[in-house]
Length: 302
Image (cartoon, rainbow, N blue to C red):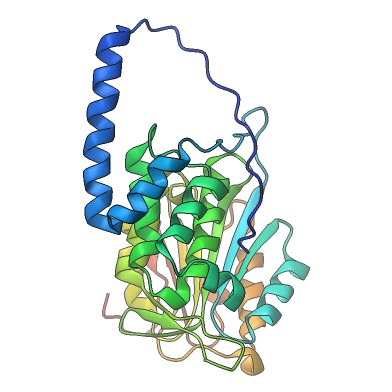
């Protein structure tokens, strides 16, 4: 989950190419001017003035000395998501990065300033040196459901950490209710996760962190009627090897969702691809090698 913390200083890279200082200064000024105008139209002049006032953030340290460990991302929208996450962590061999709904964190991201501070200070993305990435990252928060902003921030941190070499985000689980391209969780007095518009929020995330999106090899939707989302996911995650989805309903925690998730985890470890016999309930499996794994005698619309 997103927690504010002091960023780590990144060591500057050595540059060997010689650049005319006057020309570089003019180019930088032009880029910053163009960036300011784009930001003003996106988040308002007052927020841009605050951004300019605070200057440059420190960058997050990128770990490049050794191959990062494999990791699984889990994003749970329902109140019982923690039980699924705990079951996944108990059974998995890889590190599990968990995102659960948190109303306190959600409140901190309701203002434009809160969103800017998260991207600048927590993710360490400097808008003056990488405006495109800064703008795309900020766009993830500005355009998502406000009640989903805390978990969007979690996913951004998850993907940014993968790009910085903290781990290799090879597998990803999205858990909740689903219908017609929207995912959500049950609302309670202490739980309001908002809605995820898959065709908006996942492309925004992948555009902001394309290197992390390219790491994802296996994806699971623990959600009803998600077979229709496979085509979208193959476009967003270019190295995708398998997708576990549901045709019809998927189980809730009382009906065995945690067991389905741990089954998926076991069958996608290392270089494994899930097979037709690994399916449970209404699950459907797509692989890059064979497409949907259809049961003998069963017709498919694909």
